[in-house]
Image 1 (cartoon, rainbow over the protein chains, first blue to last red):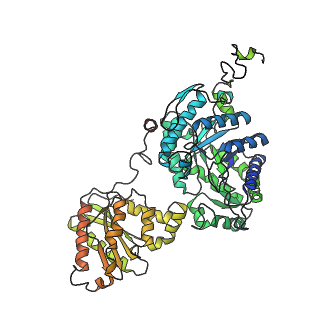
Image 2: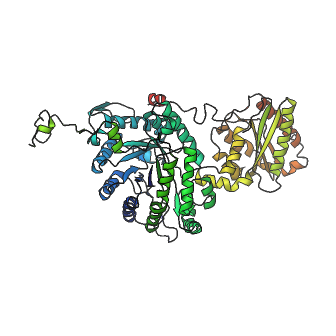
Length: 386
Length: 214
């Protein structure tokens, strides 16, 4: 099972000091958080995509490319990549590129985005969210799997003889998750392709998560990808820890009370009962997290939200230390002991390459190169550099 | 929700009165009793569940902020969504239904009242507010595609005495409205439990259908 963190990249005032970090500070902080995620022994770092203040992360592959260079084992992912307003051609190119620079340590999560104005800013309409996700993702898959694509659809200019470059590393596209809080069509989409389904599992009652995962598992089996309990499920979660649970509650309360998403509403205690938010000791986080399995079954990826609502970098890094030292080692052991042998791990580049019967050079060599105008001879390996 | 035999219908009563006791609740209770009697006269038994919005004032504000109903509010929302008929009564504040009343209908799923018979009632200190029922409240339920009884019952302070000489008395208006609600409720099959189509999300189109749609 994979453990990691995900960030929405919000730039929020620290309510205890009234100070709002600059974009520059917050961007450097996210790089430090990602590096720390690997250092403390976690597996995954996932970054959101937004196109409006107070968020900075408009260009996740730039950020993830940098993180790739500063890490060696960390799996890089997104939370989420906007399949509605991005051009699927650009997603295909950006993430294949990232695969190459990161030596395959890449997967991504598709999301629709729920900020109304972002759609028109990118020439789209939020009411077309589901059809956009369906059409764009179908094209994205083809761009990664077919060297030359002829395509015509409703939402993008047609393609004739288009080759998305670079080709996926080793000829194997990155694994894709689909994230949705309450749209069963997206769970249906994930199930149809045998892709992963991720429920953000924060800010909402667990019943939403339970229903969506149950539906996805049923449909995954329906489409013949395996039994329902072999479907690939990821969950979010939100935690704040201190050794003494009362200290955690006292320290986190001002951040909770003023948080952009749920602040000025329910109390921290009420929200902790109604949603998976856990504020307390590492032991409480372990117990709560192990309980997730009881309503979604054995799952493959657990991501924690630790850096939002103005929590300062120093505190976030302390949270990561506790996750790495005290929480995740126990969760790994306990989840592994509970999981039946036929339940798979989340796919990685290595496992996808193995399933494809080995990696291959997927390069599409041009018939004539634009610089010299000379046609390439048969058999790439034998050709000397000109 | 509990299953009801075909000869039984579930009535939900939403009262937005704020004082305890409140004249809004008093009117709601009168409308309920008359509706139960009118249905009984048609051979139909009833179960009645009352949602006092005052008890959910904070839950409703929290829902506006968080986007979901907490467990206590969820029970109230389910009561209304699962009912075969709704009696909705509010005080009139500043020329319309109260903000608390509106908030409850704001957080209800927009489809949950489609085709549902509704009896409207309102209270205020003076009869000058009475058309708020027709000009404010009726359009709200029209938007939600509920089926609203033609008679809406307004009770001003003086109605609790004898009313005025030109209008039918409060008791007669209550009975007329209850008869109309009973006709609407008895003429429809009981409300089916939601998500009955092969479990949760049973109505979701298959992915082949989603692909064909694009």
